Length: 149
Image (tube, rainbow, N blue to C red; front, side):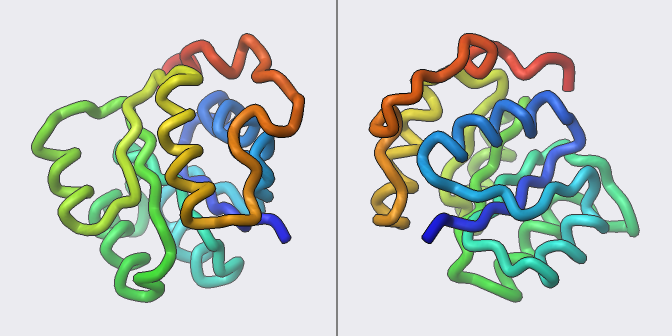
């Protein structure tokens, strides 16, 4: 059984790169949100096993990324939330990690940064394949910057 993932990011390019990496290890992307209001609705509807969240996702319905994060943690504290963001300020990173984020990856990321996350994900979800275990190599475009945010 695959790990159901909700991706929250307003960049289609970033979602494409994340999708590639996550699907390579056995995840299933069940929903994608471009803003915080969509994310709240989809989180309740699809019940993901994992969420990826961009700190700079478009704010909607009066909800920012941190409020969205807290709402998801309150409703389903067992659901890991992986922060994937171009915002690298240490205080923001510390806030999300202190509040229970699985990890905080700074974009643009490369295969090496995703390898660390992959190790954490396979420890949490034993049904996932270790990165590269599928025999499918990462496409060069997946290793590059996801483009403008």
